[in-house]
Length: 141
Image (tube, rainbow, N blue to C red; front, side, top):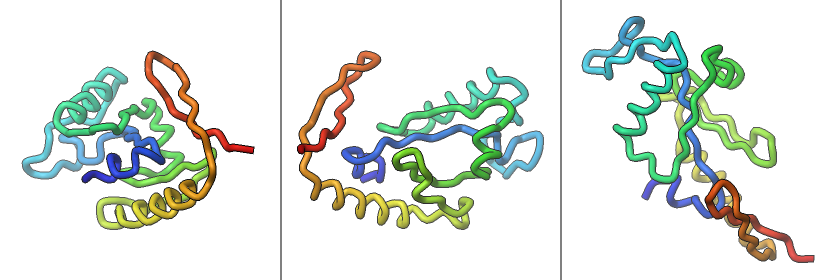
C-alpha cells in the first residue's frame, strides 16, 4: 500500500512540480523522458500533466511551482525532497533525493502523529467546500 493511502486519514499528500531536474536540453539521462527545461508556464503545466498521466498519483494532489521557481528555491527541492508541514510549520525536512530520500522517516513521523491524534477525543465535522466533503476533527471540551 502506498504511504499516501496508508495515512490518508491523518494527512493530505501533494507534489509540487518544480523545474525539470534532468531536462533533455541540459543534463539528461539516456532513455529519460524527453522534456526540455520549461520556458513558459504552459510548458511546465504540460510536463506536470505528463506526470499525472504516466503516474498513478491516487489521492496525491499535484501543484506546479511558479516560473520563478519560488518553491524550489525556498525549499531546495531539486531534484526531489520530502517535507511534512504541520500547523503551518515544517515538522520534517528530508534529504535531497534520490540518494538522501528516506521515505521510512516520513512513515515513522506519520505513524507517531497518527497514534497521538487517536488518543485525542474528537467529533467529526463535515464541511462542504469546492464541491468536496472535507472532514475536520473538532475537539470535545
